[in-house]
Length: 81
Image 1 (spheres, one colour):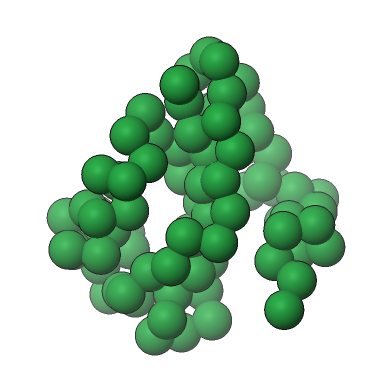
Image 2 (cartoon, rainbow, N blue to C red):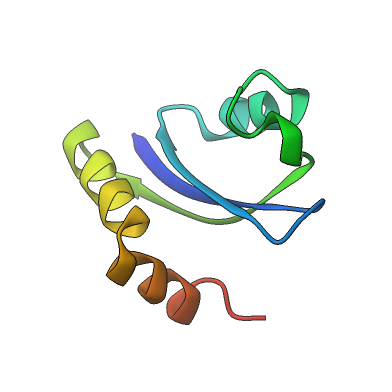
């Protein structure tokens, strides 16, 4: 399986979107500081994920979520308070 995920920083009001094949391991990497881009904003909480059959689908959905309309979609559908 391939996963697209959204993390929320507990330190600031930032979100991180990515994809992986091992969701638990990837979240641990973000929280341990192994990911350069997310290191300054840890700790992170997993707020959304979706599973896909192929890497292409996961990457395509990640790309969409990072677009302007994708950010609006995720705020409306997944990131409600």
